[in-house]
Length: 95
Image (tube, rainbow, N blue to C red; front, side, top):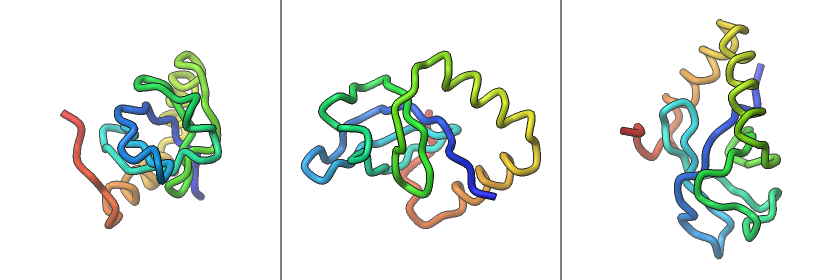
């Protein structure tokens, strides 16, 4: 199963190519934000991320509630985070 996981925008790394750095479960990743209107995104905004694309913007309360529900799923959430951590496109671990 592949999940859309909430992540928080920490940097607009390459606005010309619609790329932002997003913190997803403690890992910072380059994410394509073209689908959520990058001009409308700001540092600190939350987005749902699936396979490297931000699918839509969500408010912080919804992001935290979604994360809580994903954690309750246990194995599927843990497996997707492990796959994310092992992927070759990992930028850095958030401090």
